[in-house]
Amino acid sequence: MSRVLLIEDDRAVREGLQLALRRQGHTIHAAESGEEGLTRLRADAPDIVVLDLMLPGIDGFEVCRRIRATGDIPIIMLTARSDDFDIVGGLEAGADDYVVKPVQPRVLDARIRAVLRRTGAERSEQEKHGKLVIDRAALVISKDGGPISLTPTELRLLLELSGTPGRVLTRQQLLEAVWEHDYLGDSRLVDACVQRLRSKIEDNPADPIYVQTVRGFGYRFGPV
Image 1 (cartoon, one colour):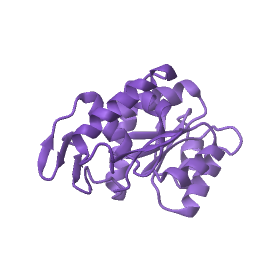
Image 2: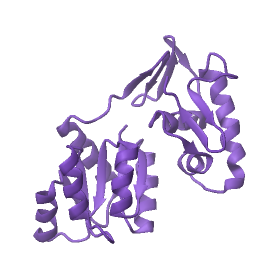
Image 3: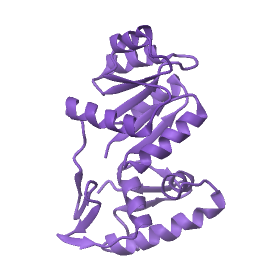
């Protein structure tokens, strides 16, 4: 699935869309301002940006123009109004499509997939990482040509980590993405699941090459 950068200042909308799009299989990174969004764009290298137009500070129109000035990453704008001024202004700033609030997550998911198909930016659903093959469409994991049986939680953890190879994810971030809650005291859930996952995908779980520990921070996937 795609890596999505969501730039939205309304916390309720942002968290709701994050949860819904993750359930659709996307990897989501979120920012609450235009400035933060531009910073995360460089750090996270998303496949597509979902951008609210009405942002504090740098508004969505300017964010869109700045993104478009540096590359051709697809942009879907979110607008609270359906009038021509917002829509035409956003499209002229460089957006590829738009969705009017309140946003229906399934509609946004369909628009994301459609834009990525049109722009040719949709990521391959089958990824190869050394001996490990991850088929995100079929939700099948294999190694050396043989299938690996994972529990749903182990699978979600692997998909979350492998969605951004080389990027460190904290236990807190993994709790929110995989277990969908953020009680830090449950970080032992993450550690235990990592150990089980390593026992299934690593040649040597004591010296992992796929799911690596970054001491004091969390975990990262590869690079292999």
